[in-house]
Image 1: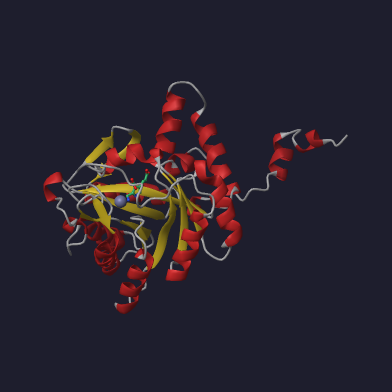
Image 2: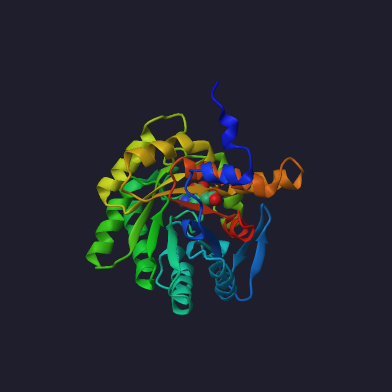
Length: 322
Ligand code: PBG
Ligand code: ZN
């Protein structure tokens, strides 16, 4: 008989044998929704304790985030319906909401590492991630618009642009544009991004639900085993700096395989809005302890090989000392 219980006898012994790398504040990336106006701090109905901020209140909140040791943020733009058009112009005009937010953040907190989401769905009247031709998303004509958005965020001072549209060739389009402009901004590719029901609360937060159809012609089909790895390989080939698997908990197999196959590329996992709200609502309803369910889930993501985790729980995780 092998005596395993000796590894579990006391908290000190359990700590000693815990060999999953710890989750440090510097390994967390905190998402923000940025909107027009002043003094805005609106809680998102489907995501408890997550807000849409105007740029002024965003800066106050980032001061708090930094005080916890979290120095990485991911920005999403939320624009009024009236500013949306077919081509998502609001997302890449020179004074777009995200470029203004990046400038304000960098002026006040130069040490913050700023990631910006690059996609059209937050800015198009139809809510799809690319340009439309009839009811189809037109891959190739979308690429220059994504590159323009990345360029605008990069000149404003973004450290990373993070294309999430799942258009083929989007990494190459961004890479060429950034190189041509001699900008130092890096790319975090949403490489293996699955068409997922877990994005539900986000679409409420960002007002980016498609007005018809779904995203299954561009986001990945979860009934595939190897395509996610091939998507990552293609993004590396096209010149990405960091790679991502999204969502996290339902895709730990993909995450683990990515960590084994691409050890030289910083691997990010996105614990998405549905994961966050599912746990919070479950805890609220007395199904489980909030801190314990997040500690266990985030540790699983880390154990599967994520070096960085994007999570709406980042601040609470650090504050709770988990
Ligand atoms: C937009 C985008 C989405 C998310 C990140 N970028 C929504 C989607 O693709 O439908 C999801 C994030 C989350 O659910 O927390 N392209
Ligand atoms: Zn999108």
